Image (tube, rainbow, N blue to C red; front, side, top):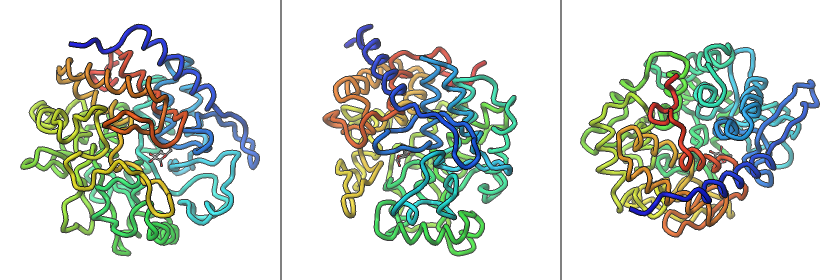
Length: 408
Ligand code: GLC
């Protein structure tokens, strides 16, 4: 077998990652109230603000270079938290919304300090990985309580979203059959945003207005990792009961109202691989039947964000008016990391090493890009993209990886 990487590769990647995190670091005080903040911009030219799950990912990597920055990055999310526990998808800090974005962003007023939408709630898990015990920080539990109160539609612990971008997977084709012409990056999306602004991004009001609302797999996997990090009961049994399609051997989103066409098969069909308590037989089937299949997910740079055998798979990320349509085929490093956790836990060590070799070769070749062409490895999307530094988790693994970092 080819060696996964050399010591020189690890050093080169570590230097690149450190430099990028340092360059993207932004700190100061909010002019309106003097609240201090510090975070890593996802990509300074393209994404200036603090994005919730990006911050969780970069805090994970910061612990390798400067653990104090992991803490400060996550504390900034807590500094933005509303008294009722809510934390938004994007926090604007000292760079208020301007121009056309005032009309198209998920805000209920142009002066809002953050969006009224959510992103996958990774804070408790990231805190456990990078800082310490999240149960010692009341704001972290309060955010999950807010989600339980406001976003748990059926009182079974699973969290629902009112817009595709709340999943972090904006234009993923799993949403095409659900949101149709209102999906992310299509002209109708602006109408969806305006409707949800009117309804205050309130799940129950959106349901009452006819939906659609979605229970998405990877968001619930991340939510569950955060619950486990806090010592709460696992949602894995509910995720299996409600989202596992035993016939196909994959997980699927649920929507309300239900759609006639089944959702496209994307990487999130395999996302429960990140869960340490996923039953082995389900995990092995996800890996052997889907992840390692060269016609589906085992491409030269795995895993593509959409199964290569799904009709929606595309390497073209341009949509209406040249706007980017994300998550429709290219490979993202955060999803590579989450699926790799399952390979490692279930003992697929050769395949785990092969995934690391392929992903790290793409990053070494193309730099820290937002996502990568899964066939050629070419870099795509934004440059100096902060969460692609998660490649460090792959190439220089932490001993806690087999337990999804939950082992104390
Ligand atoms: C894109 C991604 C989203 C991410 C944001 C900032 O919108 O789809 O997941 O949080 O960029 O990087």
